[in-house]
Image (cartoon, rainbow, N blue to C red; front, top):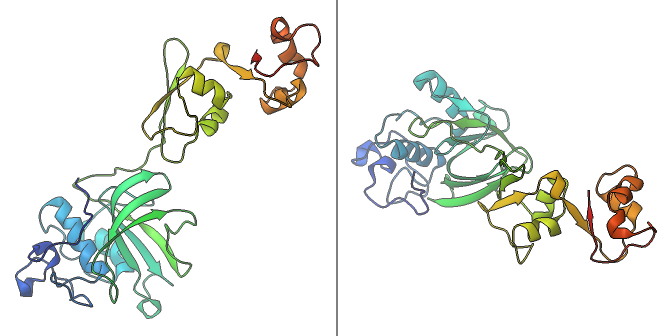
Length: 276
């Protein structure tokens, strides 16, 4: 699916009313654009949903925005899920769903799924603009909408299917190491913490010159348990390191590293590598 990042051009029949030579049965937008169902979230979402399919297969998505789910289910038997799907229509109610007197709600089309809490949408708005893109974050369960709105669900686009964010599953290699694929929002320290190691170890193990610069899609190899170690920093104590690594008894850490530390567990040096 090719993302839409610009306003539909004049003459695009998916966004033009039948009375004007197009496919749409939606009302005129306000202010009315060259594509006359814009500006209007309903006219845009209906047009974009069908444009992705390639034909005006579902023209009757032309009700109040917050009622799209009922129309999609009852009229067309379309699937509705509780999370964003690629090419799907996100549906919000304003106030109480189905009560038009407190607002008609809003709809937008999912152009890209960035991570489990971030999507990129294309939208339009009655009494607003003909077109815009938004990066929406699910910080409050409403996917970026204000407190007057509630997220009702997403209508799955049958041309795409139920394509949604799936948490990547690291795959162990025969050597016992794990290969993790970086997703949006990851940090090397966060990945290290998840697997009981340190960002210094991951940086060294993966030849990463700057631990603050990792890329989405980058493969990070996680050492097997036998290969993990902690690099002593200024101010560290053996008990403090043990606590940081989740080791209940610092004596265990000491016993595993006597050959490095020596006979006095109170004397550890910056740069020492302690296996755990």
